[in-house]
Each structure stands twice: as C-alpha cells, then as structure tokens.
Length: 522
Image (cartoon, rainbow, N blue to C red; front, side, top):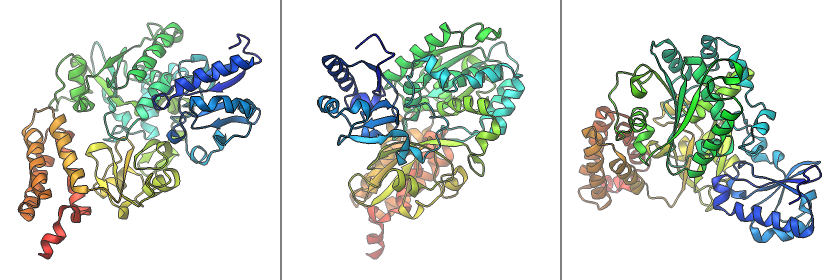
C-alpha cells in the first residue's frame, strides 16, 4: 500500500467480530495484496459493522457518490471486484449501492449508533470529527446537578431490562455522602440474541468512555469499571486500546481537558457466569468474590462497589448519555412514545432472514421489526414465536406481534423488551422443549443462594420431561404452574423470578405442544 494517502482511494472493511468470523481479515489482506499488484493506492480503514450481518463482510468504497457497498465479500471475490472497477463504484453482482440509502439503514433512527460502521473505532480524531466528546465538553461547563437533571429530563431508562430511570440512579448516588464513589458499566451481555453492547465496545468504544466520564462528573465519582464478559476478547482489546488513547489525549485521568476534574477507567473481565449480569452479583465478582446475588437493601447506589455509592448502568444506557448532553434532553425525549423515550438498538437473531442491528425509536411494532427489517424467517416458513428480552423473556405468539415496542405495552401482556434482543422461531419449533430449555438454563446458571431458584429450576426440568413423556400430563402441568408461582414470588433476584415467564408463556400460548388439548379431549 502506498504511503501517499492523499491520492489513495479509501476502502472500508469491518473489524467487528461478526465480520471477522465471516472472513473479514482475509478480505482485507486480499484487497491490500491485489491493490499492490495493480499499483493502486488504497487507504484501508477497518471500520465497525453497519449491523447488516447477512451482508458481512461488507466492503465499502468512498466515492463521489457516497460510500458504495459490496457484500458479502469473500477473499476469492477480490480480484474480480478490482476487474469490475469497484474502487470507482463499478457494477458487480455483489454491489449493494450507496450504503446509507439502503432501506434497512435509511429507515432507522441512529442516535446511539450514529458512528457505528462509519468511523475507525480506535481513531480519536475520527470520533471527534463525528460529534465525539461534544457531550463531555458541555458537561464540563455544567454543575453536576445540571448534568443529572439533563439525564432525568431526557427520560432515559435503563437499557438492561429493568427500565429504571437512569437519572434517578444518578441522583441517588450524587446525593450520597462518601469519600469515594464509582461508576460501573454492566457489559456482561449474556442474553441470547443480544450483541449491541459488543458492537459499541468494538465499533465505537470512545462513546462508552465519554458516557461513563460524564456519569462520573455528574455524581462525583473518580473511578469507573467496565465489566465485560470473557467471551468478548475483541471488545476487551478494543476498549483497552481506546482507554489508553483517551488517557494520552487528556480525556481520562487526573485532569480531564484541563478542567482539574478526574476520572479513571478500567476494564474487568468476567468469568462467564450469566448471574453476573445481575448488578449485585457483578459487584461481588468485581470485588474478587464468587458471583452471588446480594440481598437488598442496601441499594448499590448507597452501598455498592467496596461498600461505596455506585452508579451501575447497562452499556447502552451509558452510551446514550453523550448525545443527550450534546444535543439536549428535549432532542432525545422527542423520540419514542409514552414513558419509553429515545431509541433502542434492537437485535434480530434466530430464524430470521436479515439478522442484525436496528436502532429505532420506541413505538414501532414487533411485526414491523420482523417483516420490514428482518424480512421474515430465514427458512421461508411462518414465524411461530418470538422471544424478546433474553432467555428469561416470554415467548410471544403471532397474535401479539402487533404490540408496540414500549416498556408498558409489553409489561401489560406479561412480556418484556429487556435489552432489545429478539430471537425468532418458525413453525417447526417445539415449544415444550423451549420451555424445558428455559428451566435448564436457570438450573445451570443459578448462583444457588436461594432455594426457589436453585431447587425449583431443577424440579422444573424434571416436571417438563414428564409432560413431554406424557406421564400424568394434566397433573404435571398443574404442578409446573404451581412451581412457577413459587419461583416468581420467592426468588431473591430476577434469575429465578423471571425463569417462569418463558415457561408460562409457552404453556399459555402453545398448549398443543404440551399435549393439553389432547388431554382435555380424552
């Protein structure tokens, strides 16, 4: 590749984990090699993914007509792409056209993900050129109380599942008296079908760093931790690289941009326990202990990490803060419906034709996500069920697909939006086995502290096995419902308390898979 980049053509190849898994590194190497053979100056930028995973690796070329995309590209396609003059937007079977104009992207409201797929994730200059650190700059000129108020006014709620108002958490920590406070980002993204946290860390890490720094300024915290699941090695490496750059450039450390205010940030790797997605179990893990749920009170906002007041937010909650500070609370809360303000990056997975990330304002329906963006099932068969909110979320039948994606609307039908992950199943799915999976997942992942979760999930697997085997089925279904009631009302945390949701929803909406109609008919 020529050192003279002024006359070079910029080509983008994603460095996102999804693209890497599909051969992006080989494609990038092939492009550099082929350009060298042909004596062409190419400036190769490793950007993030646009979130259209069925097109990965998606190669983009900067042209006078915008960034033109080609995908999915394999290393073996590179020579013929050069032959087709793809560096000037030439025609080729893999050509997708101007990427920003593709309906999948054009019909989104990308606020949190505005830079993802566009910039080089570890280029601070790139970040600054795309509104990066505008929020922090504004926050440095504000009183801490005003920062908290801006987050309160924006209507931002926790994006990890509970949907608790973010500003109220911050207000509680800000008002607490202590010699030290902390900000902790819960990036233990263990829910099935979720990957938005990973994408932020890999594809726009400075946004998270900025959001956590603003949180520190707001509540008086001087130290932050990002708790990342061990299954995300690329995210951990990218985040550490970005933190080092931010420190070098004065955006982290003892004197943030000459303000005299300090904030330090570290990454901590989890050990693969789903329960550590629960905030108090995560704190135990951060302190070097076994990840076991703590009893509340005291609340972590008052006695959290190392017994000090602690802000604990999901990654997307913290990543939403920079744009709120940069553009104002009114700008953000004008998106969404009711009490569900702003946007959420929905993640489409499972048996879906166009799996990927879709950031939309709250209010569209589940059906719109499945059909307008997802394109229906990958198999071409009818979608029979969708699980929203991870492995503890309810299974939703087609009769509920027109429910608006709104926290209250979902809660009204016994479902939850959670982290925005969606897993689709076509009409070949066996819902009794899916219910068994939910119980088994809980049995494996339970921290073991409380009896309803530890024992209830194990007994639940046994009862569902008897139902599947048609052993006194009606009696076993009654027993399963009773067991679920005990788990919901007796468990210490959401792990045991929510495991019955997928089980009961499967029983209620898909009784034929449990043989219930046949039992009644008999």
